Length: 91
Image 1 (cartoon, rainbow, N blue to C red):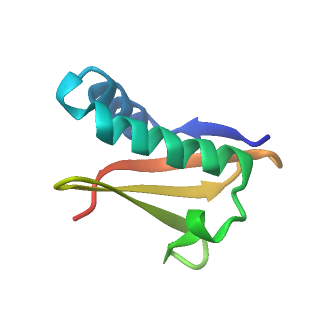
Image 2 (image 1 turned 120 degrees about the vertical axis):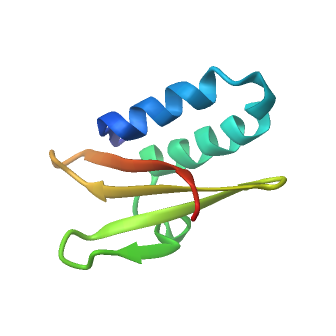
Image 3 (image 1 turned 60 degrees about the vertical axis):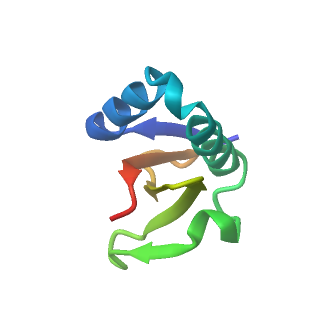
């Protein structure tokens, strides 16, 4: 299993989402996407979008009702780690 780390802004966004009971369904979908990332970062569903080819950052769109969110992540810093750089609205 891969460790999922969060940059400070992504961590703060997750904390805000967890604190908002009106967004429980969205939280469930974000959690499911993060679980897939932890178990299978090479899965095509974790690489729906490509950002910054030099840094090899990837995007996972998350949809829940009217909410369109995005998780942007990259491999590292360690061998069995990924870092979530952004969690929030898909703008």
